[in-house]
Image (cartoon, rainbow, N blue to C red; front, top):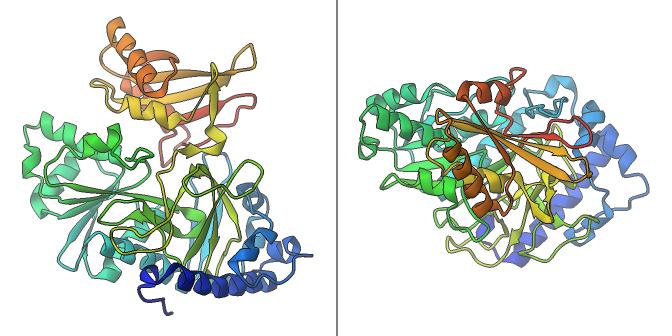
Amino acid sequence: MTFANEIERKTPSDIRRIQDGLLAQTVDYCRSRSPFYMERLKGTGAVLSISGIDTIPLTSKTDIQEHNAAFLCVPPGEIAEVVATTGTTGTHVYNWLTANDLIRLAENERRAFVNIGVGESDLFLLAVTLDNLFIAGMAYYSGLRRLGAGVVRLGPASPRKHLDMIQTLKPTGIVAVPSFISAIYRQAEKDGISLDSIGINKAVLIGETIRNSDLTSNELGSIVEKKDGLKTYSTYGITEISAAFCECADRNGLHSHSDFVYTEIIDESGRPVPDGEPGELVVTTFGVEGMPLLRYRTGDITFKMTGLCACGASSARLGPVIGRKAHKLKVKGATIYPRAIENALVGINGVENYVIEAYTGDDHSDNLIVKVGSHNMKSAFRLDVCEAIRAKARVTPAVEILPPQEIDRILFEGGRRKPMLFIDRRHKANDVKL
């Protein structure tokens, strides 16, 4: 399997010509091999360029949930790996990957690691799971190995275990959820370990955004970056497309690889929005054999950035993910996403964990309750939490202080592999993931 060399540094017109050909190939492949797209593309003519992509119907997550097997484009004997989304909405979305799809997955991450200066002499600690159908850990592991870097596959162990491994093996980088890095810091402080003694100099951060819309570090990012000499890089992955977007060394937006995906940003009506304006991210995959997707609605709200990046890439980039489209809330006239509340909570001393719940009030409007795990049960602390949320998110929800172990029970209820930070109880009792 071959890959385009330095495609991101080609001119925008050259990149567009390459993507024109890739889109035409992908549409023909889906039309001839995928039972779902055979039916969905009936009446759709030949698509020969990106300019005609809007003639292709959008694909939703519901489509994949209801017709999962119909997206498969290869015989069962060609499947090398099956991965799945977290399934916090009640239904897993399975993704089938061929041997070449696994190479593509590894190459996507290899390029991302190269873009932040990782080399063969680096040793990375993986604080994410490689099992339970989870694609991210496998992707980062295979990308680092394709690059030639060393890997320590510790996974989701305790902060103290990670500290022990850091002090013993002295890794130069880590892949982790930002809030877990913060937990490692807290454990180090409890154990009297100086952060300066933690030699890690690069952190690739998944699952939670560390940037504001203007690309400055948000509260969570600032907490992680308090360690001197640590460079943080935000990454955003999507199981269904078997790819991730990652910042480069200049941290000027999330880069994709133009020969792997094409991105669009659309409004509520499905129309494209101008660059820089927020909307729903839509992704078309290139080079996928097992389960390619055409115009897949991710449900994530972000914006597109164009123009030459300081790293030399001329391809479009994405801004930070603002939130999930399904999680948009209208609280007392203010439109917010739960992540704005998260950003307030992570900066409060004494907050161990939390869960945000939305429900429909008697007046049919959106209401919120924030359940905070803390050992500080004083009423003054609860008022401090309320004020911090009001200052950051411009709303003042009900706040309940509970023991941290009670919040943990809610977060991982049902044996979830990832914590459910936002529970949506509006109208229907459908819990959805943040």
